[in-house]
Amino acid sequence: MTPRADTTSVAEQLREYFDDHGVGYRISTHEAAASADDYHAILGTRYEQMPKAIFLRYQGEERKGFAILALQAHKRAGLQRVKRVLTARDVRLGSRDELREVTGCGFGELPPVGGLFGLPHLFDQDLLVEDEPYFNAGSLTASMVARPRALEALKRPLRY
Image (cartoon, rainbow, N blue to C red):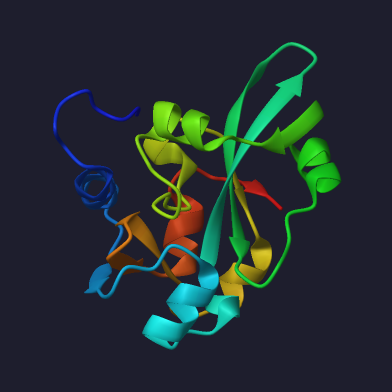
């Protein structure tokens, strides 16, 4: 699935995607939050239960493209590890322009769900021990809460 050219927002697309896949969730609205520190301060969540979405650009031997890494908010992405998981020869962070063009999201809006955009999805296995991960719902003013096993099952992400 790729972002629609019509006026359907990424937040609406995400809710439809979860509904279509039978993933239970709840929405929490709040003040604008674009970073893990903002979410922590506004929602009072622990960094361990906040999967941040990292937008990546990769180049493999026979393919290139973009991917999304869902990673606990207090961690840093290990690009060497991402290269191994994607079997890529080069990985870098995607630019804000690439993020907008590929997903329709601005900085801080990207949900940690690669399948929504038809992208490979790497999933931090430490997220599976959390009961209620809070993550961006395609908007700076809305978060979603869903069971981590349901998130993992959406498109069988690559284990990170």
